[in-house]
Amino acid sequence: MSENPIPVKLTELTAISPTDGRYWKEVAELSPYTSEMALIKTRVEVEARYLIALSEVGLVRKLKPAEKERLLVLGPSMTIEEVVRVKEIEETTRHDVKAVERTFREMVAGTSLEDVTEMIHFGLTSEDVNNLSYRLMLDRAKREVLVPALDKVVDVLVDMSDKHKATPMLARTHGQPAVPTTLGKEMVNFAFRLNGQVRKLAAFRLTGKLNGAVGNYNALELAAPEVDWVEFSRKFVASLGFEPNLITTQINPYEDDAEMFHVFKLINGIVLDFDQDIWRYISDNWFTQEAKNGEVGSSTMPQKVNPIRFENSEGNVVVANSLFEGMARKLQSSRLQRDLSDSTTIRNIGVALAHSLLVYKGLLSGLARVNPNVVLMAQTLNEDWVILTEGVQTVLRRAGTEDPYSMIASLSRGQHIGKDEWQVWVDGLDIQPDIKTQLRGLTPETYIGKAVELTELAIKEIKASRNS
Image 1 (cartoon, rainbow, N blue to C red):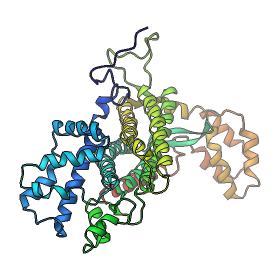
Image 2 (tube, rainbow, N blue to C red):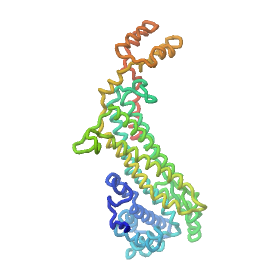
Image 3 (cartoon, helix red, strand yellow):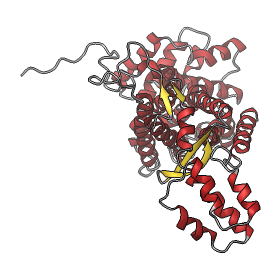
């Protein structure tokens, strides 16, 4: 049996990861932030900004405005040929950051910056560059792609909540009929939960370090003792938008990444909860799905319109959260002052974010194709008025009736009471006439408590949090 040939070209059909293959079009917007090319460009960006910072403390000659501008755009404007050059050098160095440093030197050769090339990567260890680069990538992907996608989810749920804040529906606890609620209130529950975590994610501040091989500025202090390297580090890291972490080994501890990953896990868990609820509502025909011409729901059952978008969203939660959990668990431990096991682990942030993006886009796609079946929901709500007995026993408690719960339970548990039977049932209760009058007017549509008010309150708070 001959060996399988290695594909010559990486395409959506030859990619091993589904995020680079089948789902590429859905997650391609993450590529500028989390791909190998993005990592290389971000490393060059950090090295260039470091060179500028060295100039500002006098270790590099004063740079002209045009030279600073060139350095600031050097990483972001790298061409594919320049990125490929880094990979070519890495074939020899077998060290990715050293390959970046050497490519950086080539990029400034023959320019007015050629005289400062020896100060590139001055006194740094690769982890000084890496910890800042990966966090820049994560922070930018979060800010530019993930948070906007999540805000869209919240917006859709808020719109649905507002539109149906007074649409009554039957709530279930333990899968059994409980008491009435409204569709808007149930939708806003998820919008409110999601928005709370998304705001935490949006405001989350990562850390950064720049302090040498074991965190003590050894080489920097020896070569340039006149510089306050602790203050230099603090200022440089803060300039990138991070909280300076001054006490580290070679590795900037990953508690900040792990904490952000946990926020993503919480968000994805909320979406999973929603996916499963909406799946049940579709199963009960409380939500109907739009059928698209030409689409196939089943290879053998032509009548079917399956809730595959919500199911795909649910499946991607499992993959994304498994990656977040695995990375958080591994990254927090490193032997002595460092080992390299974190390096291969942290490279998977893009994959975890991609599966998360598929979660949110799957949910949005599914919501765009479903509509509440308010007629059936109302019909189901009115099938059994026994759901009103919670209110009955509570009213009787206030009126002083002895053990009304047991009294109502003996008359209603396991029974089914329709609209017409309700009046007869209420008339048969041994209660005061004024209370009977109150209960005769009670209906499933009106027994919704503060559902409308709570929905409006939640929407108001969500909007306020977005504007703050």
